[in-house]
Image (cartoon, rainbow, N blue to C red; front, side, top):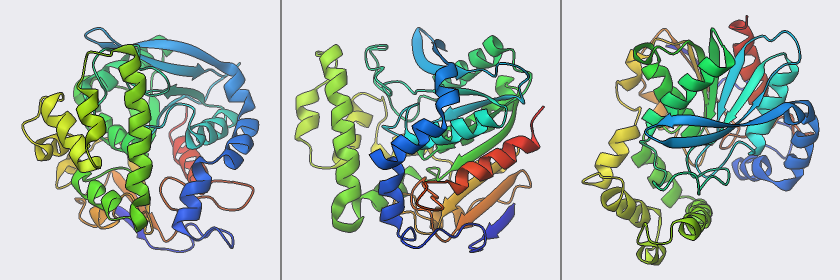
Length: 333
């Protein structure tokens, strides 16, 4: 595995942006939203709303922005848990890549991006088959002879698993970039539970509860929402859903279902870049120290960056966007 661990020259943010919480909060805030929406106007204006087949009757929603003329190739983007195709980091990197000449497809996972009414079954992190089916259809409908994939947080985890599945699924996937990806779900849960003042766990509980209310409004009798709302924290809520509705015997079995820890990434054949930060409060950096050696995987660990942020300055320029663009250009048509 190619590594460049803790080299401060990789990414060194401006004064005031070297705090993990500042990075993470600004990344998803209104201030950055205005900036990235303006910068990415060309991509957003070119966006076409697509309903994509996830197999077995599953429908997923995405937005396809095609170049008006010659394209460098297609890049599919995956958001994180309780994010969407409109998350700041997705809009930011999508706009940057579009301006570099790439076609962009921003895919929403099930029950994300306001799609709670599209499928009665509820989202969970082991629904990889429908994502693989969806990207296969995107590949076919866009006529892409070779495409690239970038994902963030849980979307980074999905991107790595799609990369592992690509050869057997016949996907023409040429490059994967995973930013702050979930490696060990069990360790990620512990990190959120032990975060300062319980703020990270509280943040994700609120986002998940908002999503559950949307699901309840559309499928009021499908799940025992009342019991779920009454449970205390992420561990209890996840255990309830995993063992009651996701068809797993234990919470641990569910986590193993989408873990990429241990030797799982030893089988990666698609050229892959993994970017994370030493100060990420959600994804423990120790999870990356034990990844298997694989010449197809480039591992980059920065000192700063927070969770999926990597903001360089107060103009909200993002170093991760630059990295992703560079890696995609290496594989461009």
